[in-house]
View 1: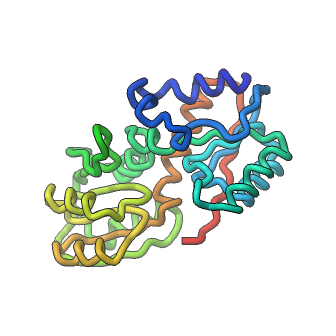
View 2: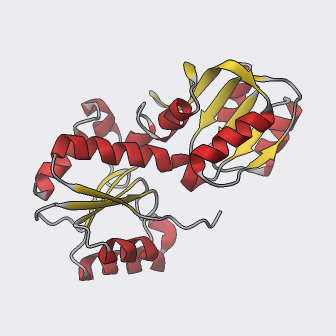
Length: 251
């Protein structure tokens, strides 16, 4: 399949209204668009020189990532774009549209934790990037921590702010360090909150409201979402090969 067919396929999972709202050139789309045959796709959460070099070594035709190359990364952005161009490598990214979907990072993490989603939280305009879910059998904080670590395949940081068994959990994968998201979790009487970033003020707020806080890293709390998205594309495109590129543990 060629690049245009890939684009049609990759965007076919999203409502037109969602794509129209986020169509500003930074939330989804291409860097280094070239219309060529796509036989092998490499995917990751981030795009860095290391990720691009992995893609080149794996001989992929297209790099699929959750994040774009950040606009304020100056020489990092310039160097990545140059490396893509020099190696005829197409880059496609899907950020906030993917975050807002049930098969995005938050939805996948909630599903992996076997949660029954009962509310949506972390609202932006008409979109939601977080959920509140309930477990069938209440967990200790240690049991929940173990499940999260198994899913993300790395250690997490935990702030224990209550001694209750955990029944209701708030999740905002990636950057859920805003007070509004934690306020939503408190409003819906969550026992624990899982996200990928923290700030002092959110930790203080969680402590004040006796809300257990689990920090799973921005990258690895979102990996499941881009993985599921890549496989959705593969299933619809047919005969292509997928390669999961390895994001570095730097958080």
